Image (cartoon, rainbow, N blue to C red; front, top):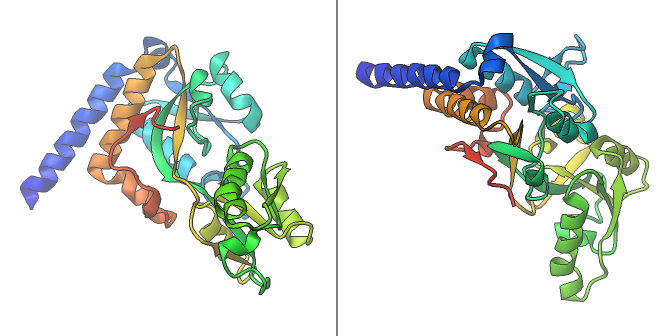
Length: 273
């Protein structure tokens, strides 16, 4: 057992040293990574209501990553729509904010995939008329227009509603998950869709208010975004994250947030579809 622990520690140390060696000279020189985050997506990224300070899975992973690489993490709150352009114009070094790795986004950004989730329907707990996900056919469902979810919901409707001779899902784009949730509470929507990783947290914060419907309708990779012209940084980050998996740091962070189900065994690059 002692030999196994020692082997794990040595492997993690070697991975950390290797990751530092791979860091671009410019990053080593300034000693920091500027990381874009938008704290409006708990438990991935949000602010602690009691202290108004950043917290969440991405915040914990980012800080642990900085320690592993020997650099400071400088968090920069950035509107979600500006994150990709921030990478391209080099205003930020990384995006670590629950961003889904998609083929379209890969045209501008390299993604280091570190988590899995997927879009899931949910509704108000009091809606006795909606017991199963197929009860949504013909009803209004809201989801963030900034994501791929409206298109995925429409495709789900074709396969599960229209193909069965039922009325199509009425998919309405919202300004974000919080907006869709507000419209759901106001009775303007029958259901909403958001990342499966956020629904357990939502239910823990607003007890007896919501109920999930089915499971995630697809599997998606959440990726850490890096400028496509910076392969050295991609290698350094990938090796550091893999080292965090090897020594258990990664798993401990996910366990803290009760999201071990989204863990990956191996860090991949641009694995989103």
